[in-house]
Length: 213
Image (cartoon, rainbow, N blue to C red):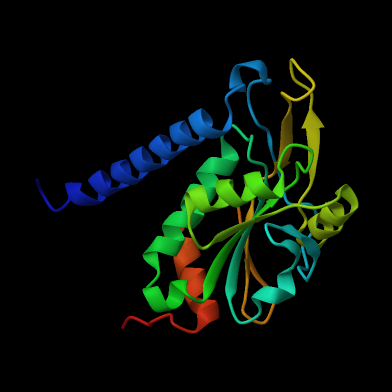
């Protein structure tokens, strides 16, 4: 195999890994997928997000973003029953976490915020988030708490009814966000941003980025 073909092969391997992750998520976490309406609509980020702290509910009770001061945080708003954008985006965040050094990873978290508290219990979110990575936390909250967090980050969503009362989709903003160790919003990444860009930005806020000459 020529050196020129190796980057293309690497891209195909990454795409294949993401596809496998998507199939596993759909199999394990969406047993009623056939009853849901087909297709998720990714919504854009609303306005210019300013970021900031919020309070939601995590696996151990009340969760505050401020608890993660000193760490870089990669945030994604979605829900565990999402058929496509969420598992793909969380897989990318997991890839970024794995690409960091052990020292950098110990100072970085993934944070999955479910906008579907009706179905995403704290127990389910704990399992779902760690399915992607041990450094990922799953949280949710009351509708008004979620709305407040969403406003801070320009995340919007609305429900799309399906074939049964519990087989619905939620169209939502599919961006990822990077919060620096001081709690400030450092970057917003559109859906489809590669893991390499998340790694680069995370290292910048951790102060571990290297300059090549």
